[in-house]
Length: 111
Length: 114
Image (tube, rainbow over all chains, first blue to last red; front, side, top):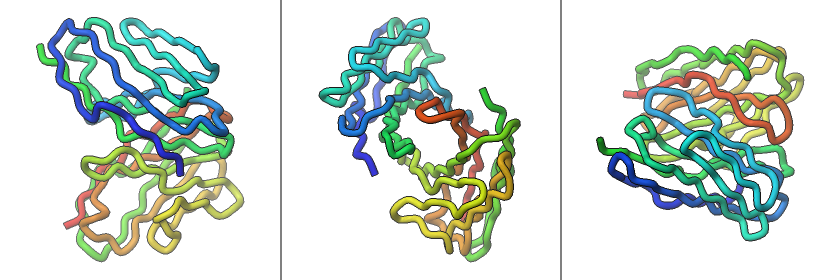
């Protein structure tokens, strides 16, 4: 089992604010790092799959960076909107062919 | 992408009974994963189901409590046996298209045990 930590555990921001979360994971046997968004009453949905050290991915107002040497990834949301309210999960994938999810960051965007 | 049908979507069960959750994928996949999210917790991997072999269970999960079937490459079931209120969770099946590829999830089963 991998020790995956996400911070903060929860976050409340005003609409229009930018925010970011952190995912920390063991850097050994690293293969890929996944970010998922899990909205209430829906299934988790993949945001990004990141594999290379220094990777930066972007999807609309959401972006993510990856540091495999030190074992962390940041997720950024620019100009948060109420529809961004969800739990954001990171899941490293190692050479053991398994995903282990972090505890998640619950984001609430207040209109 | 993958289309995954999971049922039931929710159920309320009595203590001591068992519930079988079904997961049907629209195409053949090698591995299927079963996850659980207990209230206030994140997704926890229960087991990995491979077709043609016994499922591989994570620490803290045993076959007697969570028997899994994988009769073919598009279908799997997870049974929650002898349920107690602590089994109240969301159960999700998921698949991946290949090593390190993103996971696709079923719609989830919301289980409440009274």
